[in-house]
Every structure is written in C-alpha cells, then in structure tokens.
Amino acid sequence: MGIGEKDSAIVINGKVIKIPENEPFIEDDFSLIEKYATNSFATKILTELTDEEKSDPQKCSDLVLRISSILLSFPQSKARHDVKYFADKHSVVNLEPIRPDEPSLYLVAIMDPLTRGAQKLAPILDTLHQIFNTKIQIFFNCVDKHSEMPLKSFYRFVIESEPKFSDTDELIQNTAHFSSVPTSPLLTLGMAVPDNWLVESTLSLYDLDNIHLDDVEGNGISAEF
Image (cartoon, rainbow, N blue to C red):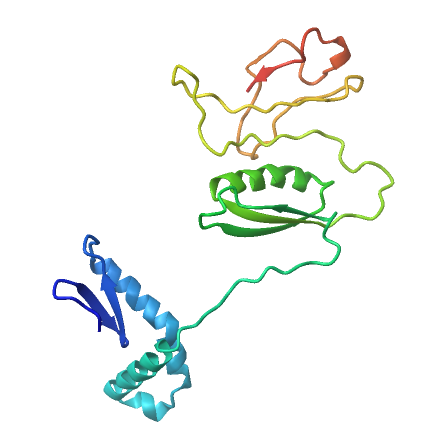
C-alpha cells in the first residue's frame, strides 16, 4: 500500500489516501471525503444496480466497494483543448493570465460593445483578470448597422482590484477619471447607484447638471460624492 510505519492514511472505497504529516484531519474532512467518494462513483453505481442487488445493504455495500476499486484502477485523464473560432482576429479579445505559471480561471463573455451593459461589464472583467489571474475571452456580438450612435454617455465603474495607500499609509479613496471628453456639448455628471442608495455631491465648484467644459477654467472639474 506504500504506507510507512509513521504514515497516516484512510481507505475509502478501495482507495488509499495518505494524510500529510503536519496536516490536521478533523471530522469535517471525513464528511468531505465521503461526499467526494459518493459523488465520484457510488451514486452512479447504485443507479445501475437492480432492486434485488440493493435489497441486502451489506452485499450492496460490498458490491459498490468492489466496482469502485476496479474503476479507480483506471484513472481518468482529461485535457483542456482550446477551441479556435473562425474569423476571431477582429471580433474576439483574448486576455491571458497575468501570472501564467500559476493556476488560473477561464472566463468567456459575450457582449455588444456599444451598450450600457458593456460599459459596466468591461471594468468588472478587468478587475477579475487582475484579482483571480483569469484568462478571459470576450466575444463581440455587434449590431451590423446603426442609424445613430447608440451610446450617448461616458461611464466609469469605480472599482479597484486592491486597496491603495498613500506615502503616509492613508487609504486612498476610489476615483473615476474622464479624459478626452468633448468640450462643446452640455454635460451632466452623476452616479448610477442602486435604487435604495442615497448619494449626492458634497463638494464641487460647478453645477454638475450643467457642465460646459469650454467655460471651465483650469484642467476640468472635480467633485466628491
């Protein structure tokens, strides 16, 4: 069985599982491994047994044990294959994991880039890419033609992948920054928040409902909410 004199192990359905020397094995671990063994083979095997075979609990248990032991001797080997899509050069954005040598998640998103939903989803995907070392594929599901520009607003999702601190160890508040905004149209600055939130501007030198950047002195406007 490959178990030394001082080694610890458990046997479940004919499978020997070694317990690391410095790893505590508690009651919850037994429940977890029992659930794993049940979901792996036992439940599927029981569905294939006849009523007569399941009538005697002892014989049924022995039969499940023997079949599980045989199946475990033929380990499953599965590999993930990347599917190449036709003509994905211009309609798919591929973001590889930031740390390719570490385990990563794989996330696929489908969006119309000229929608408000895409405005909200893009920064969330970027944050997930940084936090969870995610490989992301974004498929553009675009409308062929538009009679007019479907997006008439600029949007920033205020979210950070981790807290940021100043040189004096003070927490830096999250901010949204807009650049290269047209200066001639009349603009409005506001926040899109859940309906049960009450958010309002607490500090601003300008009327945020009537912003005309051509009339603003300096490098734009700022506001605190």
